[in-house]
Length: 244
Image (cartoon, rainbow, N blue to C red; front, side, top):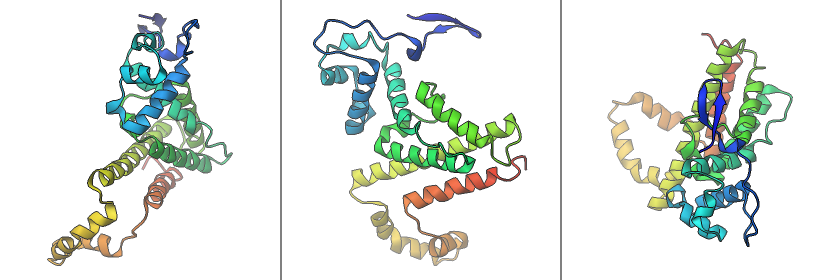
């Protein structure tokens, strides 16, 4: 157990602050970066449920116990994996204009989340505090702090919370739809066509006039357009009075 004194009490040293184990005279060199990259590749191919220390060790060509020199449990392994994915996002959003920065970060986050579908499963709980996650958070917060409607730390916290809630919801919905399409063999369009006659009969009753307007007159966008519209709605609000 690694323990350190912190301002709010004692706690275990995060994996980010522990030195790499000393190199061994072993056939297979290891590092936390290599472990994380291999684990990400396995999760991309088979999902988180199929990821285990034993399978990861086999893929790396080492014994399972050797991995525990680098990560003490599965939770630390997941943190390394998540931060490796944040590393793919960290280069986005270098525009001097605040809105362009946030849009770039959000779009890159979507792209990366679709490349690594398990990533969205690990969002929404406690914040991730790895170096790359912190870098993405800093870039996002710094950009939003320059938005016209953000006048102080309370506004910034509110806007960040709203943006994060949108991102998590949008990404999980899109990933869930992709998984459902694979599991059922029918994409969203095919599902809609199959239920079309039933929905028409229900709307013809006149009991659901607002839903009928949405179905008939509403825009039918692809996932990228839907994401961009939702993001724009959030950022449009940021340019106004966030206290209202």
